[in-house]
Length: 292
Image 1: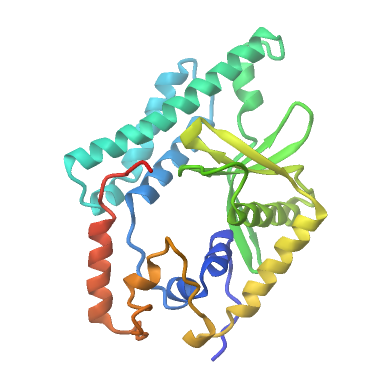
Image 2 (image 1 turned 90 degrees about the horizontal axis):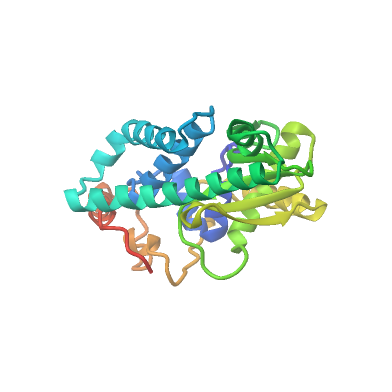
């Protein structure tokens, strides 16, 4: 049985490339997604920076603290759903504040440097000069059935435009992972379709490391590859038949194991089994964040 092409996003495309079966569970069956502490922390930090960059405040430190509190309060219901102990919640808050404080320190250092070299007149001027042009830019392309949020659009002193995606997770090795390359290429495609302007660079911004940014030039080949990848996922996801979504087992992936895929039980409609697994996943998601 085929279905109408659904609206894809960079996340759904990456999910399919990672494992078609996980895509089937997530976007066809729409199995409930249990929120994790990592997901909630990422949302809190994203919202904090979105609020921070809206307007200049003479006390940037106090302003950032106020934005963090507002963001935390906004996500309070999600935090409560996790059922964290006082210690686990404390560790999560500390981890968020560590990332925020490091990014603020570097942001203020850049402001001081711009003032010192006389690129700007004062702190206020510097703030509005280096803050992102857009925060959380939503783009929906109905012709391509493709949509997504671009976390940051920045125009440098040289006039070059960089679209960036925030990540709160850890970075391993040098350069970007393949899925990051594909994801940022899709964002570049969306931006070009929306503005008719090809961004000069796309980047991943690692907030855990103070906003360390890895940028890649946007080329016609990358735009073409992004378009072909999106079209391929559309073609491959027209079916509702589980047989069209093969497992792509990976060393660190526990998705199939969680839903008994690897043991041969393929009936995702089994509500008793699903409820049991989801309860196990919920318990597992509240463990403290561990550094690797």
